[in-house]
Every structure is written in structure tokens, then in C-alpha cells.
Image (cartoon, rainbow over all chains, first blue to last red; front, top):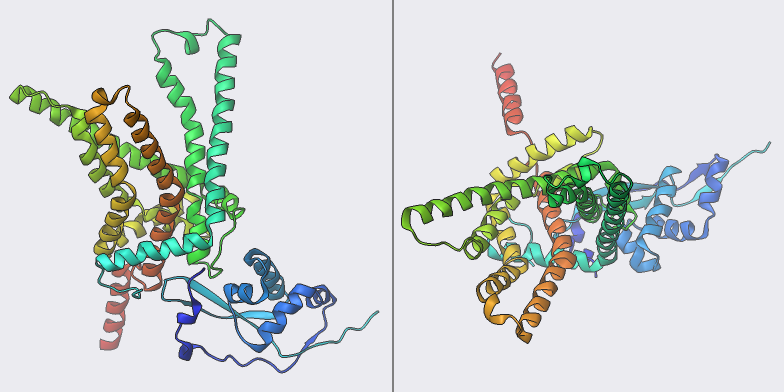
Length: 110
Length: 310
């Protein structure tokens, strides 16, 4: 089992506020937003911040797979890295969070 | 387990090893795959080199380069096969990249295919350092042998170098290892610099770490050597001392089996754990700012003070 993240001092976690709503106007974001596994991760990150190991424990997905999905979500600014910290084992952890609680698609075509 | 302390002792050294073992257990596939690939690729490269070597020898049978009886065959063989060893060491040390991914990158996991990325970036320093360590060790061995010869000349007492060599070899191997091992995690962690720049910065940070955290380094690696190197050293000494009386005995086979098992444990478990330990120590010092240029910091403070006075 990986180092127990529950041993982090929870009181040091910051509840980073996120936007209520984000409007998406770039059509290239849609495949990312509507990808099944990315949506699963995004829903979790709307509720709370998490690192890759926490996401792995919840979803059962391989960490490499999670990282690739998170990279795509980061690129489209659907999530961001809210903080980086070291746990008591000296392992650096990146925490991710969605950039908004809801995403609204507003695309005109043509 | 105790958190990371600034004052380091035996219990903290034990924590370093225990935590690295936990991290290895979570990511063993990537490390073992890297090591097996390193062995496999060394075998392939050695086979290719041997094929070319002998093919050229047959095609040009009178070539003085290959069939000159005054040129030692062994030295030529070692020269050519060192390319296979360079490849092996480079890929083996890609485990520092995996350790970086786990400990420092924020991802907390590693994948085997990351080894290829780190090999492409750092194959030169990853192969250079083991050769440097081996060269330093051989220099010392040469000095030691001269010392033994002098003792023989002065005292007329015959000194069996091999038996006396074993423990000094272990101790000085340990010292050189501790003095240089933090170079590789530093080189791995850097980005953007040229290879020479990364190597230079790696050595600078390595010696700063040795200067500022000697207790942690010597305690942790001392314990590591006790666990992973001392047993095989004792067995090799035992073999040297009692070889003649063990010839033909089933015990010799058993002892060689145990020795081989210990070497395999050292390679498959000890080597990945060592990369995790050194990366963890480096990462901890780096995050606390203990590897920063102290003189630069002091000069900034002095400049600010003089501005305030003005």
C-alpha cells in the first residue's frame, strides 16, 4: 500500500473556492469534457481536491491512466493544481481540483 | 514512524529504509521491469559486440589489431564489452528517474516506460558515476596493494592480499558511495540545463548535502550497507579462507547458492531501495532549502543590510 495520506494534518488543508460556473466556448474541449473516465474524475474533483493515489483508491483506475486523463483536463483548464505538499514520508503530493462546479457549453456553429 | 527530523540517528536511518521499502512495494513492477530490461539489453549488446568482434577477426585473420599475440586478448575483450556494461549501468540507474517520479514529481507513482525518457535525458551521467566510483575504488585498491607489498618487504611476513582486501574494500566502497551517491538524484531532478550543466550542478549539490547532512547520510547508508552488503562480504571472505577445504564438498555448492541469492537480493531489492533512499534524502534537503547556495544567501543579506544603513 502507498504511504497513508490520512496521516496528513487535515486542518492544514485549504478549501480552495472554485467558480460556480465556467462557460466553454472551445469546441476542442468537448471530447475531453464528455469522455467517460475524465467525467468520472472531474465529478470527484468538483466535490473536493484529491491527489492521484486518492483518485486511484476511489476509481480503481491505474495511476498512469489517471495521470493521462488529468493532463488532458489540465490542458483544457477544466482542473488545476491547487497545492503541492510533502507528507510525513517525504513524498511530494500534487492536489487537483475542478476549476468550476458546473461547466456550461456555449458554442456557436457555424 | 517518526517524521523527518533534522537530527538523524539510528531510528531515523531505519525509517529511511522502511519507508523506501514501502514505496518499493507499491511500485515494484516498474523497478523490476527496468532492471530486467537492463540485463536483457546488456546481453543483447554484448552478443552483438561479440558477433562483430569475432566476425571481423575471421574476415581479416591476419589483422594485427585482433590476432596480434602480443596484445592481451582479455584487455581487448574488456574494452569492447565495457560498452555493454555502460548500457547496463545507464539503464539500471534510470531507477533514479522512477524514484523521482514517486517522491518528488507529485505524481507518487512510476511507470516502466518512464525509464526510457530518463535514459534518453541522462544516459551519460547514469553511466559515468558508477565508472567514477569503480575507478576511485581501483585507485585505492592499487594503493592498498602497494602498502601490503611494503609490509611484506619490511617484515618478511607473507600477507594474503585477497583475504585482507575484503573488509577494507567494503569500508572504502561505502565511503566513496556515501560521498558521491547524492549526485544522481540531483541530476535527475534538474530540467532545462545541458547535460554538462546538470552533471556540474549535481556534484555541487551532492557535496553540499554531504557537508550539511553528514549524520543522515552516514547513518542511513551505514545501515543499508549492513543489511545489503555485509552478508555477501562475509560469505566471500569465508569462501576465500576455506575454499581449499571445501572443494568437492556439497557445502561449497550451498555457499555459492546463498552467495548468488544475496547478490540477487542486492540487485533486485537493494538497488531500487538505494535509489529511493537517496532521492528521498535529496528531496527532503532540497525542499527545506538546505542545498541553496549559502554564500549567495549571505551576500543578499549583506547587500540588504548595507542598503538599509544608507
